[in-house]
Image (cartoon, rainbow, N blue to C red; front, side, top):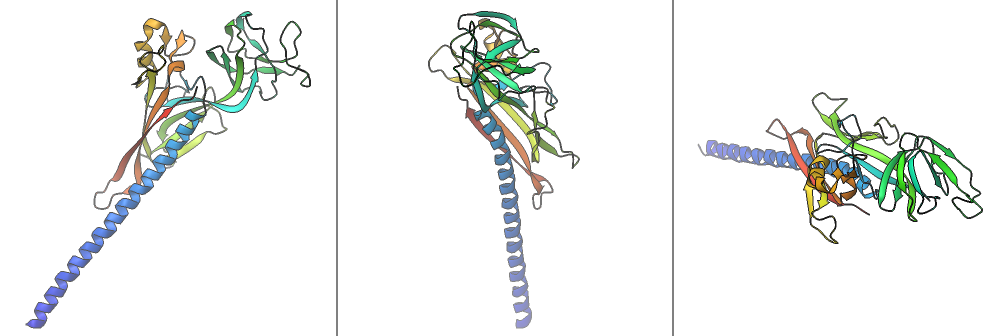
Length: 301
């Protein structure tokens, strides 16, 4: 009888020990999956925030219509204009007016190639240009100068003609255009990936490709000063550039470049939220874990 009681107690203790061990394994499995999901999301978010921090003057790009095949910015994707590190002063006489111009004189066009993107900064006005040709005309051993005795190179941008008046602070920067979108996983049906498109039309190959697997959602908000004319003003975050432009329509702002004053030049911060799923199902639940990470990036000048 005593032996049966002892065996029963041993059985109960063994069951309790096994249950505790199983729960411990399940908890560790759950925490491992959550850690992997967090690491994947953080790494993917780093790509986006790094590109946002690499820009200046014109940070986000937009065009209509906007969908996942085009470089544009809305609540579920963002197109980022980033500096490459190459630039040149503009060699045009300050005060001179220009209209519908497809050519710009700069001090050194050697970093620019046909097919490159350039950001033209001219006294607070910014424009994105597609370089169609360059002319290396300058004597680089001599000081750069514009007309009437020019010593400069020229770049053509026949698809993006410009008008205005030159200032003494005009510069041309070489830039990249990267667009982040969520797409179907090409390898696993029913799953999603974060994808990075490059180029003006989204068909670039350099720097393009899958950033992270298991990403199910991307949300973006655009921070614009409540009062753009104030030295310091609270930021209001809008889910789309159209919403932001609507709030400032009385001041002539539009959601896309070329339709008035581009609202993108007022954006001072971008908030990004990424949602992703764990690489496997949670123990005992039969479904993956889902997490969201969010970061707000204050933009440079």
